[in-house]
Image 1: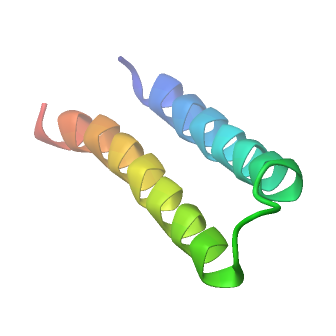
Image 2: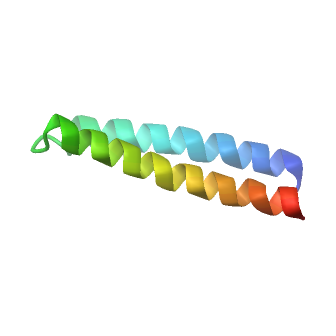
Length: 62
């Protein structure tokens, strides 16, 4: 995978996460409190960052 593909992948993954989390919190998380919504935001962000980090770590070590 080339550098441009990784940059594009990072942007696509980041924007997809943002769109999904906004739609989820706006339409499907009505029954959750503030702290539960914050936990969903942080957990999904950590998963997204982990996926992006793995992609870039492979490039850095390869």
